[in-house]
Length: 386
Image 1 (cartoon, one colour):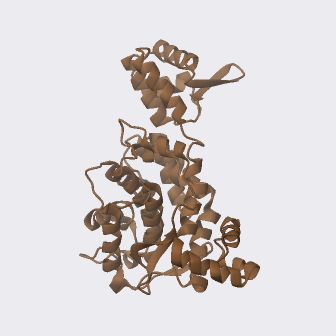
Image 2 (cartoon, rainbow, N blue to C red; image 1 turned 180 degrees about the horizontal axis):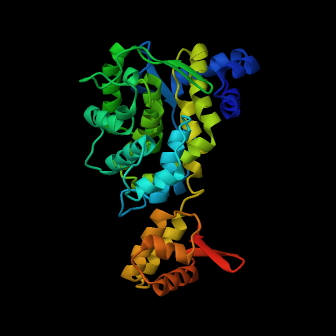
């Protein structure tokens, strides 16, 4: 195929919509697909329901390195309180489950659940704690534990897993926004999920963030459960990144980014299903591109910038930060993220420092360039510099 035509099609903003591209480019698009088959598709050790290797186009788009640096920032805590709050609210909202933010905050503060809704929130909190512990490796048994604590224990009898079964025992049909999909024949699920677990634990040359997106897609594709497949796919996405050393995966607004681009998220699934009708292959490139463009490359929005964390690290090395200020800084990052707070609010929430100490800490960190302030009449609010 002529390289100029191939490049033109590859750069077309609609190149992942095969039906539209076939109409636009005619026979050239057929030649384009054959060239992908011959030279560009990277086959995965995962299969579609017809036993054909799933593929993707390697190196088509790049993950912003600032996102990688942000995810690799070391953390002393399992997860950020504010990020966990956003994660629980957003991952549930994607599937039209509305949790009260007040209830989520209460559970994250350690309060006992007072109703069924808060019990379910507690389950997701336990799930975040489970995947944050790097000793909990990605195995079928641990996946079952994660599913039961976050979803399975709260289902009606019709949707519950049978005792002794890791996955569903009947057919499932998926209709969610624009996605219409039949899950894998339940008799084949154990075989396919074992392949996925092996893939997650295999050493290969696939970029970690790309591989996490592929794992995410495949769980939703196979649909191993009657309910909660999306929530589990998103949790396993984060779990894989944590296992690979991306400690800040639970300190970024992951599912919030997905919720904010929900139409494109489901659209990527739809594109993959529709494209197979033209190419005969499940090519996960649209899903990978979705994550690069809508999640990974936008992680710094609403997150503490790598540059800010570097300024803090430099101040520590120079002996400018006290032990108490270190505790306060970590509390602010975990509890507020990049949202605003007042000195009075910080004093109340932290609970282990006098107001004078809090006030001195905030002013000092503003002077260091770590906090910015906004005045609302007589009141002043602060937040971490993004």
